[in-house]
Amino acid sequence: MKVTNAFKNRDACIMNKGTPSSDFIRLNNTDFNRLSTFIYDTFGIYLPEKKHYLLQNRLLPRLQKLGYTSFSAYADFVLQQGEHSDEAFEMINVVSTNKTEFFREKDHFELLQKELLPDFFGRYIKIWSAGCSSGEEVYSLAMLLSEEKQLDHITDFVVYGNDISKRILAKAVNAVYPYRTVEAIPQNYRRKYLLRSKDKTNPTVRIVPELRVKTRFVWENLVGKQDTLPSDFQIIFCRNTLIYFDKETQYAVVSRLVAHLVPGGYLILGPSESLITQIPKGITMIYPTVYQKNT
Ligand SMILES: C[S@@+](CC[C@H](N)C(=O)[O-])C[C@H]1O[C@@H](n2cnc3c(N)ncnc32)[C@H](O)[C@@H]1O
Image (cartoon, rainbow, N blue to C red; front, top):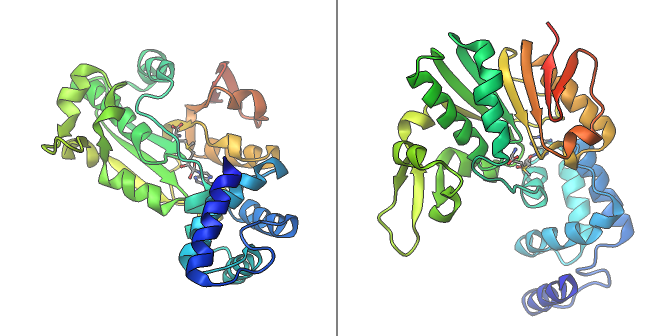
């Protein structure tokens, strides 16, 4: 299937751009290594050889858009532009995997509400969704916290989200989602926190403004030098993001997250991540995917 798509793309390019060079459409090993090393050094995302075709197929439309007829010319361009260039961030827009859902792994939300949040009752709550993608996790957390506020369990709250993809962050800020994605949101939350579009052909929902103002979306690389987020989060969700990093980067990112927690604060990882990630000193596992910063 991938091969078929690649050839379709090649044919489209031949028609538009004339005769291709010999390495046209195929990402050879040299250029795979150049690009994957650049992606690793810049964003921490580890692309082993088995991701060769994934990288090729995801980057092809970008090459075509820019009019490049070979991966080596594109690799020359992006490497020359450097890690802070617009093209580096355009590239990561297409390379990163942004799958997410409202109330994904809902056990974590129940645990948060019943077991973790009571530690901080009576306080202003700050939560961070690290690698937040298009914002569903941020708004799920905001809905839950809004309920807790209405019960007077907490005084107020803010939910931060960061991502490296500008394209996906723009979606998060816009807060408009296809209607079919809201199924996991409890009925009573849907009534309170979602506005329905009138468009019957493309039904969408938008998060209500009262909840949107409780969120902050930040374009920040978890493996970059820039580190602007607050250091007094009570809770950090970093789920389904560490899996794209190698062990060394996972360790560095988890250490960075822990530095942003208050003593006694909680870090929540994705289900498969707690098994693969080496956990730094200073935090203790209290449930299989949940860690508490030592006091
Ligand atoms: C699969 S999504 C997970 C979204 C959400 N946390 C969830 O569990 O549903 C992973 C997100 O991490 C982001 N990401 C990957 N590397 C990153 C980095 N170095 N810094 C910040 N975000 C990153 C990706 O762009 C992507 O949107």
